[in-house]
Length: 269
Image (cartoon, rainbow, N blue to C red; front, top):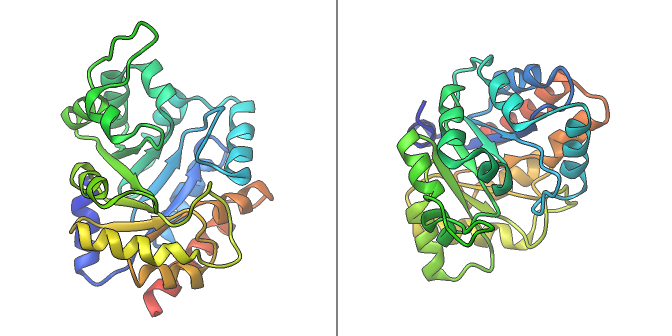
């Protein structure tokens, strides 16, 4: 399934987009959680591949990654497990560049395609290295991830920050595939008591820069915050609020109920 085509179609139908984040490998029921949030009204699902040094993530996602790794989650295992899921909406993996480099660009991209995964988010791979390749320990840059992903049909979603200048923002929007991920605050992921003042600014800047779907994420914790953020964007990404419930012992039913509350809020606003 083409991620961008699907999200555009949903947007054109008048729907505000909702993309929940689920940590891959977090317990034996994690695939059932993916199915539950899809049934609850997600438009796509972001699946986190745990990494030992998740620089973008705050306490909740870090803890989820730690627990998943401790019980044996691996990038290869998570990607292979995703092939068992047939939910009718696009799937996007979120991980860091180290596992991708270790795998090899072409091999990693091919594994995503083979498991029916439509997109990838690599938050620590900046635009210049995305298209030019990051040099290894020998000082030699391999072929770029952008080329490998494009050739495999994997859509690479890029992130834009509040501090991104306008010329670079335009370049990020031009190269992003699937959608553009607007980071709504300065800081790491995690729940916040109120919507960041920068969230609406980020949404407006991105909407002025691109016609691609624009989603805001990081710090969006309640349906009310999601509704407010979606006024300046095409939709939202919800991560820590969902993962916290899983860490507290919630399962597919609780995850589905939370996502349903976000869906209802966005649909009735």
